[in-house]
Every structure is written in structure tokens, then in C-alpha cells.
Picture 1 (cartoon, protein in one colour):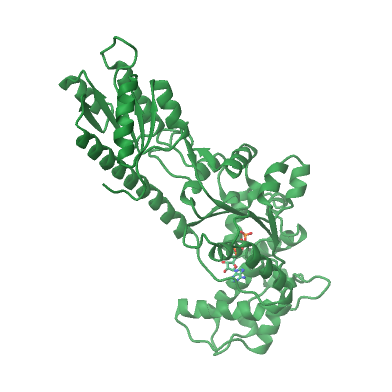
Picture 2: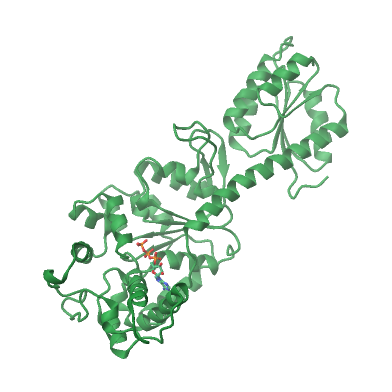
Length: 461
Ligand SMILES: Nc1ncnc2c1ncn2[C@@H]1O[C@H](COP(=O)(O)OP(=O)(O)OP(=O)(O)O)[C@@H](O)[C@H]1O
């Protein structure tokens, strides 16, 4: 019989000769086998190691033949992992007992003395089913996560960006954790994906999670998953981002917003690869490379007691800083032309590049929303442009003539602005004043974090 990886089987029985015989039989077929003598030992082993099948006896204490201990054990195993196949073996088989085992969730029922061929076939079939089921949940969750993230090349050619590109190329192939810093919209997400694509994990999943956009209380379940019934809305088992990213890269955006309680759990995964789904005591183990990003000063958060210092050191093995777009003028034509091409294709329009003046305007603008704002500006220009080239007026920038003492923008006239323009302008100005710190900006504007992020998205900042 063949499975990609041999089944890992837990065998629970109080009789040593039976354990010995089953161990010899299953190992002979290539299985990994762990044997235990009591229900407690079985639960302990299941909580700490991954198994594909549990093969259990029904009676443990001497002189009992009721099967109650085994029946209870089926229930306890179900609580740990509802999908794990439990195969029951007993010398005291009755039809009623077999029915009761199945009712409690056992996958199969066998009588002692057993038939070797049947035991082997059952173990392999159940293990295959279990893996297929588990893989299907993880795949469905991975697909969902993939749909949420877009893939793009990392474009940069300015002198300022050369050392940044160099360090990314140098460290990408290692498994070192990377912390990317930079203002909103500087391309931290694109850089994370780029690092993944240059790593040995490139064909494995790239999964991202934005800690800033999560409602309070859901961070743990999003990161580590949950089991059915763990809380009111937990209608079924769900894999968390760590499971989805197993073998690949997990990109944690806005890491500074990770709640203290989760910081402790994250530290444990970084140190041991181990965690539990919410509501489960079963320990899972993964191999994940962490790329995280922040626009806030984590050293300061450490001093303020908001971020664990030990976690920061673990995440920050290699720091990568992305400078704001206003400091990389040399990248603007490259980025603007790439965005133009994408949006022309998307909107099925034909425009032959930028007028020189328009390109000059793009280079001189302060870009408080960085590359994301440039992308949205070009998209809007593509939609508005009437001529065969993009003109300055198509760009619709609040200020087109940024000066060096206020590189982000001049104060526009209120008379020319819609309510939305004013809101956008205020957000840009406050963001700039706070050096791109989103949390502080939301606070200054009296907005909740999620309301603030909604606006950033709406205005393309
Ligand atoms: N170097 C780049 N090459 C191509 N596109 C880029 C680059 N940098 C940024 N972008 C574009 O800018 C947008 C914003 O980038 P991204 O989401 O990676 O920024 P961020 O720094 O992670 O932002 P935030 O801090 O808000 O999460 C992306 O949709 C992408 O279109």
C-alpha cells in the first residue's frame, strides 16, 4: 500500500503483548507507530503529536468488559480533533457495542483476534481519507487567502533603492525573519511577496494577514485557526494563517497592532513552530518563514510597554527599510509607466504615455500616500484623460507644484474642493505630520482604526 508519507498511528491498549504484536505488524508496513497503555496517555500523545489514525481498545482497567472507558475515549479524541479517524478493537464485541462506537464517532470497529490484512487495509484507508480531508480544508482556506492578495513585481531603479534591493536579494534565500519598515503605501506588501518569490519557498504558499484591519478578538483565530464550537460563530473547524502558510511565508502586515496576548503566542511559534487552534488542546507544528511589516516605531512601542522586546528581536533578524516615494524620484517614471500600462489594459483604453509636464508634475509632487497614491492617481488619469497623452490636469492632484519646504503639498483653496477632497487632504496632511504613522493619525483625526483604514482605501492612500 502506498501513501506519500507512511501513516502515523497511535495504538492504545492495556495489554503489552497486543501492543507489541500491532507495533510489529504496522511497522512492517512502514507505519510510524506510538503505543500507549491508558486513555490518559492516549490523549496526551494526541495533544502533542500529529497522528493520522488512532487504533484503540475499549477496556483498560483490569476485569472490566463494559467498554465505557473506550467509549469515553472516542468522545475525548473527537474533542481534540473531530476529523481524526478512531478505529476500535475489542475482544468483547456485540452488535450493540459496535453501534454505540459508531454513534460516538468511531470510523471502524474490529474484533480481536484481528485479521492482519484487514487491520492494515483499514489503517491505510482511514489515513488517506483523513489527509485528503485535512488537505481540502487547508486548500480552501489558502485559496481564500490568495484571492485577497494581489501579486506584482517589485519595481525600483533609483539610487536610494539600490542598497534596499541588494539586501532583499541577499537575504531572501535564507529562512531569516525579515521586518520591513516604511510609511503607508511604500510597497511593504509588494516587497514581502518579492522576497518570497526569490526564496527557496517560492513554490509554497505566500499567505498574508493585516493585523491593523482585524476587529478586536479575532486575531488569535485568524492566526492560529479554531475548532468548531470554540466560540459562538465557530460553525466549523478552520485553519489559521500559520497552517495555511506551512512550508511557505507568512506576511504579517501592521505587526505593531498585534495584541499583547497574541505576541506571547507568536513568540512561541517563532521559537518552536508550535501552536494550538483556538478551542483545541492539540498542538500543531509548522515550518513558516515570517516577513512582517510596520509603519510605526517598534523600538518606541517596546519602551512604552506595548510591544515585547524579545518578539521584536525575533522578527527583526534582518531589517529592510523602504524610503518614502518623495525620496525616490528616480523610480517615479518607471512606476508611473507600469501603472499606466496596467490600467490601460484594464479599462481597454489607448493612451500614448505622459506629456513631459505631467511626468515632471508627478516627480515633483510629495506623495504622502506613496506608491499606492501614485497607482490610484494614474488609474484616475486613465479614466479621465481625453487626449492621446496624459496631461497635468488629468492627474487631479490637490497640489501640483510641491515646494521643497513643504514637499507634500501646498494648501489648496477650499473653494475648489469637494467634501471628499477636504477629507482626503486632512488625512494626507495628518499622515505626513505623523511621519506615516497610521495609528497616531487615526487618533489625531478621532477615527477608529477600521474607519481610518476604510478611508485610506477609498482615497487610494
Ligand atoms: N516597488 C513597487 N513596484 C510595483 N508596485 C508597487 C511598488 N511599491 C508599491 N507598489 C504598489 O503600491 C500599492 C501599495 O503597496 P503595498 O500595499 O505593498 O504598500 P504597503 O507599504 O504595504 O502599504 P500599507 O502600509 O498601507 O500596508 C500596491 O498595490 C502596488 O500597486
